[in-house]
Image (tube, rainbow, N blue to C red):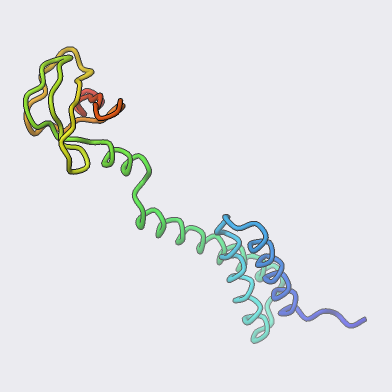
Length: 147
């Protein structure tokens, strides 16, 4: 039996990784590894390289691709903590006494709200965090208190 050409081995490895990604999607590193395997398949078809260098190139290409993908993904979408904080903040529409009730603007609408802070007044324009909701009534805390 003749030996299997090295470019074909890299092509088969890429196909196997692609099949694994198709069967169990979710780990983006497999797609990057598929691209690394395809690059090495083409490269070894053009230039004969020692096996150690091929494996090193495969690891470097895959690691660099995963790092690049994770950085791109982090810049593209804000963290869930930032999204949650923006979604759950409201603006005080009038002074609210400590532990008292008043109105806040939340999602562009005016809502009745109760302050859960028993020590400080909430002034008009203050940013507050919506901690809970009972029907059309919100429970709020000043953001300053949480920092």
